[in-house]
Each structure stands twice: as C-alpha cells, then as structure tokens.
Length: 308
Image (cartoon, helix red, strand yellow):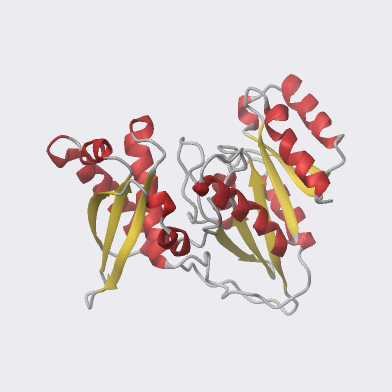
C-alpha cells in the first residue's frame, strides 16, 4: 500500500518502534494516526489485532516502522499464545518501545502492572503514552502518570488522544529523535508491509466485528482466497469467513442473507478507499470447529503455531 512521495533529504534516519499495551488500549488507533493512513483495523471488541502489523511513516528525512501488536493479556488458547508471542517478539527489532495505557479504564494501573513487571524482567525501557485523556479529569490523570513514572521503566511520559490526535505530534517528534542514522528500509511511498490479500481480509474482519459486535463470539476469522486485478483497473477479492460452530453461521448470514450483504457492502467500500479503485468482493461463510488448530491459518497470518 502506498501514498504520495516525500521529498528526499541528504541524511536519513530509519528504525522501528513497537507499540505495546493491554487489549483496547488504542494501539491500532495510534498506529493509524502516526502513519496518517488506515493500516490496522479497529473495533470496540477486545483483542481485535491478531497479527503483527507494520505501519510505515516517512517524513522529514526519517522513516519509522511502527509495529502494531496484539494486546497483552493472559492467554488461554493456542491462538492467544501465538498472539502474545508475536507481541513480545516485536521487541527484537525495535529501536524504541511505546507502552500505551488506557487512562480511562477502571483500573489502568492494575491492568498494566504485569506488563511493567515483564519490562523490568527484560530490562526494557519505554515511552509511556497515557491515552484517552479527553475522558479523564486531571485529578485522576496526574496520579496515574506519577505512579507509572515511578516504576522506573519509562524514559518519557506523554498524555495523548489517539482518536483526536492531541499530544501525538509530541510523541512522534520524540520517537523520530530516537531513530538511528540509516538508509530507508522501505520505499518512501509505502505505508504498510502487509500483503494486499492479508490487508483486505483484515478490513473485512473489522466490518464483521462492527456489524455483529457481541453477537458473534471471538472464534471467527476471515481467510483470503484470491485477489485478482482486472484489465479495467478493478480488483476481484474472494474471502472465506470461518466460524467455529454451525449455530454461528446464520448469525453471520442474517435473515435472508441481509447481514452478510451489509458486511460485504461496508467492507467493499473500505477496500475501495484503501486500494483507490473499484472492488468486487465475494464472501463465503464456512464452519470449521478446529480452525484455531489449523497450522495453515497461523502460517497465512505470520503467527507461530507452537505447542497446544
């Protein structure tokens, strides 16, 4: 995926920033805000991000690969463990780390405590981004910032709103200063390293969550089948929505196929905007009770199948 060219400067800096946090802290929203393009899906549903997503920002002679990771939580299933492993693995290539905390959560300090302890164990330092500050009075926000700063893990503290952009420019400027002198790793017009097929399936999964919200359990996936460019410039995309139980299938389809039609229309509109061309989207719904134990799913999305 690409965007307009950025004018070159003589000396360049480039590196990677891992964005970590608990589920629903706002990691994907922050990534999209930093990149200036939608490259990671968002939804009110917890643990929406399943795969490592790289968003690429190039400006002012600096290129940063922002790594959006699955939310850090206590894993129970194979997929959970693969997601958590992907999140921690993202630190291996990172020149800087941002821990984003939902300041409006009921017990934000309690939620982030295990993550901070893991940072200490790994001898890591990070930038702290207290998010959703618009929902918090200073009387609650400042004590949170003080308590987290006193852990000794954070080099800098930023109060931001990933949704509105408040404070994000200050965070971005600080991260740019951390990037080492280096040639760019990606083209200046590139904003993501995800294959188009995977990016398209993620956009459809976003609509699946938005349209069904709490009706559909977490155990659903959108598997890419094909992406074909036509001579007229349009794209034909075929995907399969996989659910874990037969009873889930009518939820996705809806009465008379109305629900799947709406999901398709919304996803098609998002994909047309993403690819800047006409999109023909074909969706099929299948039942596979053991899709979370299928090694092919993990390899398709770059996750480690690991041990059960």
